[in-house]
Image 1 (cartoon, rainbow, N blue to C red):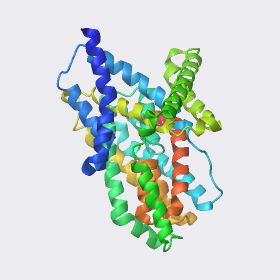
Image 2 (tube, helix red, strand yellow):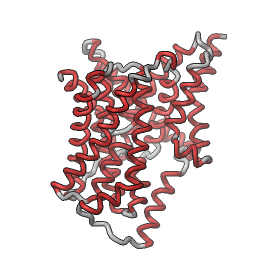
Image 3 (cartoon, rainbow, N blue to C red):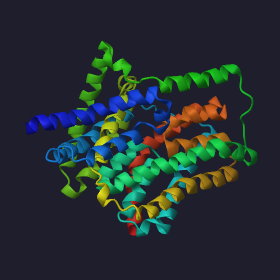
Image 4 (cartoon, one colour):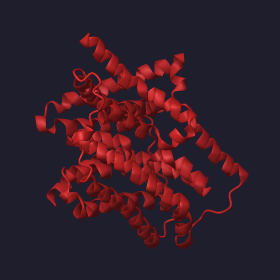
Length: 388
């Protein structure tokens, strides 16, 4: 009976994300909330209603430890690491990373020092605001961050990121175009059609291709390669002291995923990112179920909220200053900031809002580099902040 309960609980964690994704595509209001936040809410509810208390910890431990290592290589396989010589794009990439790192350090000095695990939180913020959710999850595992702390960071990140995006859409784009260089002009109907096509592609069900014969074969190859990388990375990490295992393991997974992206047959298997993202969805609901609401320090969360506000809006302010100094195109600056703070999936929507399809590819390219660099930068930042 215990084994059956474990199987049912694990199956629930693995299948609920599919239902949430289905609902997000059919209910516009839920789609605006997004699958990640929805899964966190569901996970918190599951974890606090006393469902199968005897089996829950085992299932939580297995899934939370397994999902991130599987997701990292998969999400990097399909990346194309190209960076044109366009001056604005290169400067936006570099100044964006510098702005995030600087804002995180400033936020740590103001708020982070007084927070439990403040240095680790700074590392996670650096990772998520140069990459995305995958980097946040990887750094949580790499740095050994407490589950309650992770849940709070995620919750406040969703809120602050929403405020940031709302500001840009309501005022920011027009404001920055007024006093920064701007190369955007009136775009043709063909340009707007291209933007809409990109948005439609991003709103489609990315998993429907998996249920074909070709999709199943491709998924099998991707999972086989991923398991090989996980096994080899773990084997190498085991040769080092136990205290270094998780750090080396995650960095090896990241490096291996990047290396495989340069192998054309691997890179052209387009389902890799979506499969990896599904593992992150499972991770989200599983980790959220670990949060005990009775133990969450909501008062202490105010300092964390301040930290995130400084990191997000401080980095935006610094990017604007850099753009003014180096004469970076306003739209390029905005798309780089959105790519870092909200992650690459938001790039098509922002490009459409700006009616500037020329920033689509640069934005996605910057995002890919951010995904790849996030784990390294986040780990280094946590070490640096620990010395302050």
